[in-house]
Length: 199
Ligand SMILES: Cc1cc2nc3c(=O)[nH]c(=O)nc-3n(C[C@H](O)[C@H](O)[C@H](O)COP(=O)(O)O)c2cc1C
Image (cartoon, rainbow, N blue to C red; front, side, top):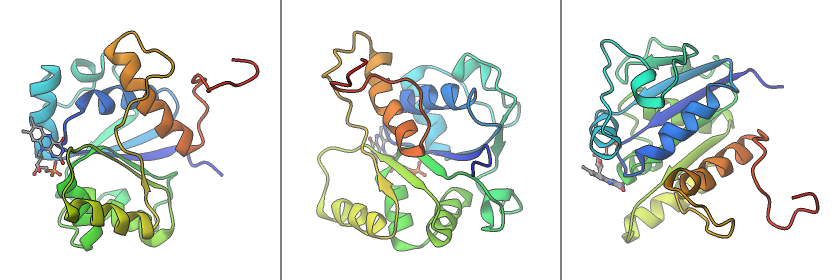
């Protein structure tokens, strides 16, 4: 049964647009979204999207173009927050985009902040954990870490956009990844399906 709650982590891999598009959509679907941003996520979003994300005066408006009051920003060093404990029920966690550094910390079990602790919790509780890594090329350590998190129960959903629906804009291209995240969460966002009879 859905709790209507989702945990979202955003890290400093390239692809801030994926977090932007995913969160804007998720805000209209989920009752509560618990958001954890790494320091580098804020830097990369500033560089790629030219937006300022302020922790002190947090608002989703400048970043997502919507005021989403159901998105609650958590401090990445504050463990006195719901997703730090397995006793808090939620529908899962998405880390989008997910840096290879964060993948490595999850794979190594060396959680050192709320983001990686929340991911650990998902794995130990058998909850959905979707990682959206982006890197190229990948070294052997990165590839092995992806295998490790996959074996531990995470879904590895690389930020590898699809072209077969002929996206016309960068947003449509990014949404080919975003739609797959929702698909993995079991949420129907009406995305195009390849060769579906009613498409
Ligand atoms: C502009 C820019 C782009 C980056 N792109 C990537 C990337 O695509 N994938 C990746 O794993 N790291 C990337 N990095 C490096 C991460 O930001 C860095 O490893 C950081 O320590 C990740 O920390 P975090 O996981 O706490 O966000 C990028 C850094 C910069 C400045």
